[in-house]
Length: 149
Image 1 (tube, rainbow, N blue to C red):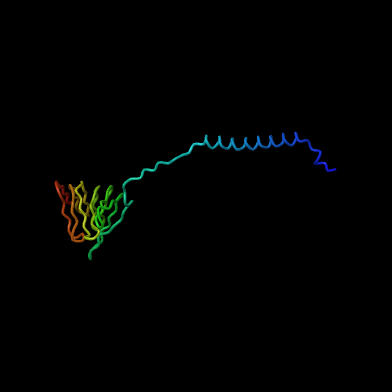
Image 2 (tube, rainbow, N blue to C red; image 1 turned 30 degrees about the vertical axis):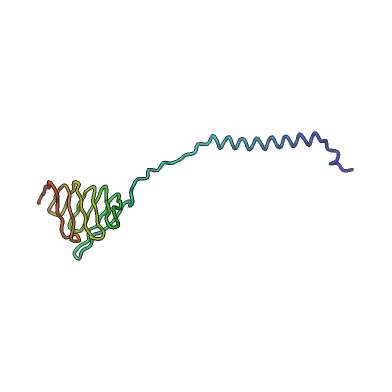
């Protein structure tokens, strides 16, 4: 006769129960570890910014005025609201302000916030400005201080 036929049924039953117990112990220990693990959810602050660090230029036949800002939002198809650290820079001058409405189609820019114009011999601080005629003309608004060197 075969040796396997003489194996005790109780021994097979206890080995099965013991295997099942270890299997359930492993499954439940993994379940407990998963439930104790903290899930880190990062809350990223999404702002209402359409363009991050926008860069534009106003081109005319004499010079190019580069425009940079920290944030930008589309107001319409052509108009963009530039916010925070807005800078207009050309070879001749620079203008710094906080909020500007830039029209890409007409190549104009308008600000109603405190602005600082700097060139080689002139400094102008004003309450706003309007750049038009492809950057050839700049009008300063409100109370303005002009320093000539």
